[in-house]
Every structure is written in C-alpha cells, then in structure tokens.
Image (cartoon, rainbow, N blue to C red; front, side, top):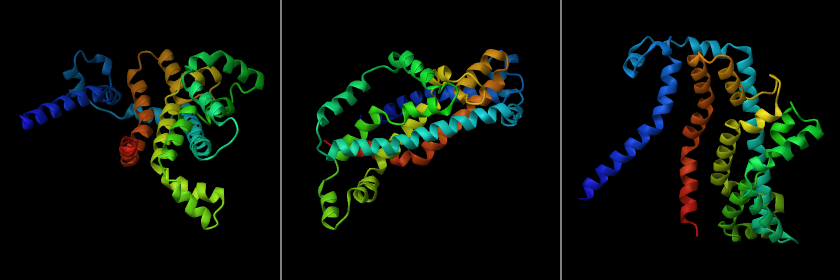
Length: 272
C-alpha cells in the first residue's frame, strides 16, 4: 500500500507539473513557428517547420533593447534597495529598543493589508506633483523598501541567537561591523529569497509602470508587450518570442538560486 501511495502521489504531481508547464511549452512552440496561425490543431503546429526568425527580429529591434534594459535597470535597482533597507529596518525591529517601536511595527503590518490599487490614485497625483512622470524615479523610489520585506527579515533575525552578536561586541566590534560581517551572512538565505521575490515582482509589474510612463524611453518590457499586442494583433509568433525572452531572466535566477530558496524554506519551517 505504501508503494502504491507513492506511485499515485508522483503521478498526481507529474500531472500538476505538466499542467503548469504546458503554457510555457505553448509559448515556446508558437514563437518557433513560421506561420502558427495556419495550423488547425496541435499536431500540425508541432510538426510544422521551425524557425528562429522571430527571436532575431526582436533582439535586433532598437526599441526592444530599450525596453529590456529598462526592465533590468528598474528591477535591479528596486531589488538592491529592498535588500539593503529591509535588512536595516528588519534588524532594528528585531534587535533594537526605541520609542514607538511597537506602533511603528503595527504600522508596517497595517500597510501590508492595504491592496496596492487603493493607493494608485494618490501615488499617481504625488508623482505628478513631484514631476516624476516619465522618469526612473517614479519606477524605483516608491518600491525601494516594502513592508513584506521588513517583516520577513525581522522574523528571520529574531530566530538568530543574540549571543553571536554579543560575542562580537565583547571583541570590540561596532554596530555596523556586526550588521555587515555577522548578521548579514547569517541572513543570506532570507535575503536571497527577498531579492528573488522583489526582482520577480518588479520584472512582472504592469499597472504602475503603465501609469507612470508614457514615452518609449522609460517604458518597461511588460508594458511594451501590451502595446505590441495592441498594434500587431496577428503577429503571435513575434509576441510569444518577446514573452519568451522576458521569461528567461526569471527562469535563470531560479535555476541558479534554487538551493538557497529551498534552504530558506526549510529553515523557516523548522523555526518556532
């Protein structure tokens, strides 16, 4: 019975994996076809001629390179800011005592409960008043620190024994040295998870980049794909090729850091 249960479990997991991977397979398949709209069924689509022409067209396009560079720059800057500022705030909430600490932390938890669409109009008016529309400032500064990142780092730091930091203080280390050379290396798993989560969120962000940018110079890749779809509704192969290129950084990041992600989840599951 135990062996049969294991077989059924793996079979069910295989079906779920296939269902989740099928959209990705479909996207790659259409992007590699000369005329995907000419196929009437899946068999014709699979066995029709393949080509990499659509990828070459996208990669050699001047505007596509600008959109890709904008997405990389914005997502990278926001990710770096979250790692630095969330570590500072999370460490302060976990280890330091100061006036209004509980109130501030409750405020952070309260902000986590507010849907982002609620602040859409006030944030847009703020960007207009600051003159940040069609600039990288509107795409980066509002997201440099997130309440989720603060909460995540704070919970992780609380699970680290304080004796490690006390030993460093006895040896004469100052607070910055303890944070950078002692606490930060111990927080590497959770910082990797935070960085991946932030990069993924910013790379796939559409609503606020769509609201804050109107020109081609600052438009990100996700917004550009929506406009591309509106202008060339029949060019599904080019659209799928662009989407495939946009998905590559996320897949590469997961393949490189999958061990750290699993390690962070395992450590978090064992903590009280």
